[in-house]
Image (tube, rainbow, N blue to C red):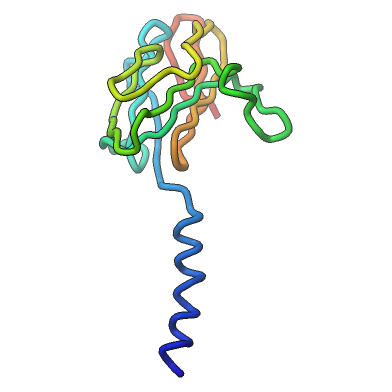
Length: 139
């Protein structure tokens, strides 16, 4: 009897674990500019480590429509991994790393623009392009 009860307790735990997104983080390299926007990846902010990346999407800050992003064609840049086990720690905007393909080619980042980055898992970043071309994380 006790074994059966324990089995019933395991199922909800398994469902919760499978439903939770992988913990990921994305942030700007300290030298990032409009001409060389470099994004750093990891499991937590400030601790770079190569992670499995299925996709990366960059949109303008006001791109959400009814709480969802429009199709990949409308993204400022959209990358997809061509295999499930592609590990990467840094990405440069507009540069397609080995093992990835562009679902939407990179558009020019504009001075004064606000952008949101979304990656596989829980990683998101909001940044602005200053008038001097430097990139800064935005609230």
